[in-house]
Image (cartoon, rainbow, N blue to C red; front, side):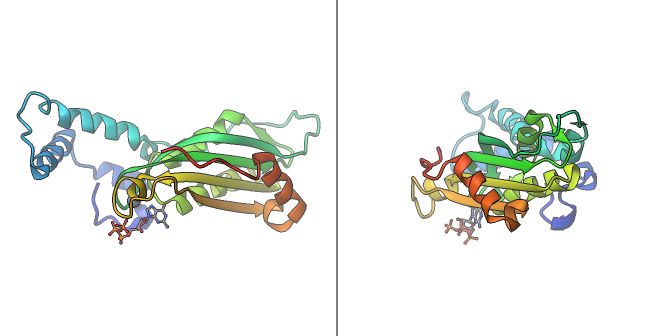
Length: 212
Ligand SMILES: Nc1nc2c(ncn2[C@@H]2O[C@H](COP(=O)(O)OP(=O)(O)OP(=O)(O)O)[C@@H](O)[C@H]2O)c(=O)[nH]1
Ligand SMILES: [Zn+2]
């Protein structure tokens, strides 16, 4: 990943094409192993650069997927269903863009259909695509809500994410048990207090702290 890449093009195909090769990525991991003070040629570490490269492919698979395409198929035969649709307690696994360590928690996603509904798994898939990129929680929350809003054009969208940041629990300030809560409310969820209240009641007032 090129740190010189301006932030507005970071999610585009252009930056993907500029990626270093697998061999360069593995060499970088080898450098980090040596920098940590260990011997990358010892038996236990000899395959580690390849393993880390494979793990990164998994952690950051979201750069390869266009979330808009995930929402392309929607259904209009709902017999007039016009109440809130809520997907709650979706596991979130992401990585903070400052320290590249896990952000672990859960998300709640709701929308108020305007004629069309989407396959419910697709909401979790949109979350996953954005989560499998380097993130801050505010941006992740906004991206998921904005994408659903732009593509599905519902009467409203709400996204709440509660997560623990390992950069705060395992290093730095060392505060385990701290959960960051972010929300993005659009349309009726932003403008209509009763819609917002209904959503918050559906996801539960008192949440236990996020894992991680
Ligand atoms: N707003 C926001 N901050 C985050 C998120 N993830 C990590 N951070 C914070 O990003 C900040 C980066 O601060 P810096 O001072 O540049 O980095 P640092 O010296 O490693 O900071 P410390 O974590 O305080 O040791 C830290 O305060 C992190 O807690 C996030 O999702 N949202
Ligand atoms: Zn961090």
